[in-house]
Image 1 (cartoon, rainbow, N blue to C red):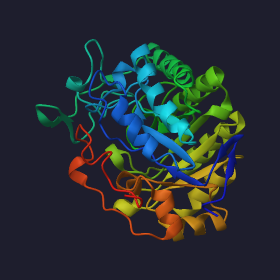
Image 2: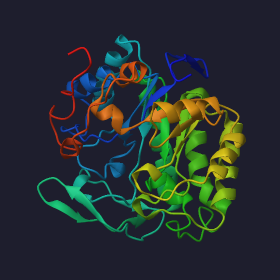
Image 3: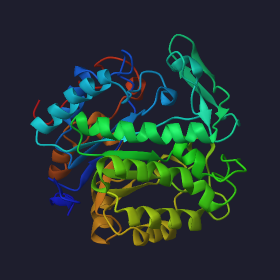
Image 4: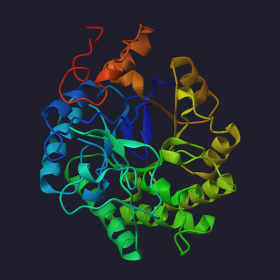
Length: 358
């Protein structure tokens, strides 16, 4: 099943393999995509769908070094290199919009930008800063309602720029402890206003962003990634998480989004997302469903066969195997990725992995 074509709300995919979003930190000049990135994505265009690395819709969301943005004309031109290269190979590609929120260091942001979050609580741990090494996360400014409204608008503007840049759609990153999940998660969202306190309040910001993106470019171009029970960046489970996410996904279903993409990081040692909540989210969403997290060919086929998902996303295997789809098809061995080059600038460990043809 994994090699069968799939119609994603009318977007015709060559197969059911999705390339997961993978931060690679190659946007070295002004957070702008470049020809090296175009080569990297074009090499992987045999995936049914590519979801790009996390891309900030705002200067305030560029918390990591060298991650790309999508909020000015330079970014649009840079991303057009990527989308043209992927489409020339027959691929489909959406951009993942990722605002890092409090997972940030001020030294990674451009002048005038600010580290923001739902509250002033500092994210535990450290952030890499080029030339300075790992530093404690910067204390965020608790977002005012004006800040929230401005950020919602930034997402909508970025969605429009994505279509202008040639993308087939966008994915809202509401997982891994970044800004959208910071509002969703009761361990992080300490607000006492209408954007906190209750499940409805915590869902509010994400739904406002989703509705604004839908109004900007259409529901059939807006997907979302979720990770209930994820522990990345001090998220974690909390009382009522299941009920909150089921209601969130039901609301997203009413919007008619492109897809819901659920990530389970347990293959990397985190607590698993319970099978029950995965099934409940699948049932709550009347539309395409993507499963992600530690899949190989056999487990991906089984998930599709069992009707647990329509598409399956692969992450790290795509780093080292630009021809992953062909390798899976032929049951060929996979190249091992080099973690030392995951986030370094340059072509090494990025565009130089061998294919079966060379």
